[in-house]
Amino acid sequence: MIQRERIAENVYFFQSEFYAQVTAGAVIGPSWAVVIDTLAFPEETLQIRDYIEQELGVPIRFVVNTHSHADHSWGNCYFPGATVISHTLCKQYLDTTGRIALDEARKGNSAFRGIKIVLPQITFQEGQLILRIGKKTLTLFPLPGHTDDNLAVLVEEDRVLFAGDTVMPLPFIVDGNIDDTSVSLKKIAKMGLENVVQGHGDIILRGEIDNAIKDHLLYLSNIRKVVRKASKRKYPLEILDENTIEMSGKSRVLIGGLASELHRRNLRALYRQLYGIPPIPTDDDEEEYEEDDYDDEE
Ligand SMILES: [Zn+2]
Image (cartoon, rainbow, N blue to C red; front, side):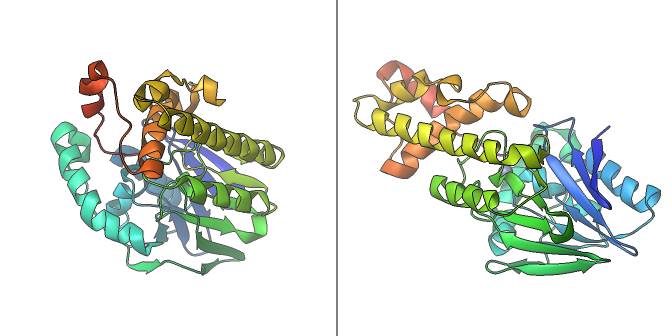
């Protein structure tokens, strides 16, 4: 069963048991509900839908996609009566790389056979979009970092922020940008929040937010240093691969044990982003390096 928690009155949090502790949310109004992110595995998406529509007894009128990655948007097709809202780029990515990734995933896993990409019907890319639901105000705004199509949803009255993947237990910038991530994290720190719902992992409580953000900023500064050091060596990849996640100040158990792998990919991606070329491996590393080309779902 998907994990479920009530964060505030009529505000819910869901966390996947299947994949990387990915999260979703819901805000329930008197006559309809908003769902934030739709996950990738139909079984869990349907558990969320049934809880809201059958147990709470309200139809889902809007779905928000925080970004286009599979684990946040593929479940859109299970909300046929809802209008999907996203960043303009999210729609574009779903329509291109999303379709290709789904075709690939279907070959490997029968769970995805029933999924169809459903493109968002309402998109925006700057400023904010406000949804009034009962007595609550949801403010949607771009919060780039993990990707450039990341949207966040703030429940104004409860000061609960659904941050998408720009907040994760380990910042993950392979499809994104390290500077945008820093700017967005600093912005969150100043928002006076009760809770941050990250795209993966547990809810960050008010008393933990400052430390979590400091910790993330320190991690980003550490990986920047490692990449800079590597750039001065003949075989930069060696330096990157020697750097364990613990050396960069984070634990490997984060994100369902995926953290070491995400860290490794962060270093390689940051190198490419800063220097415009992949880090040069030694001869023996070459084979391993070439295999490092697969899709991102996180
Ligand atoms: Zn993501």
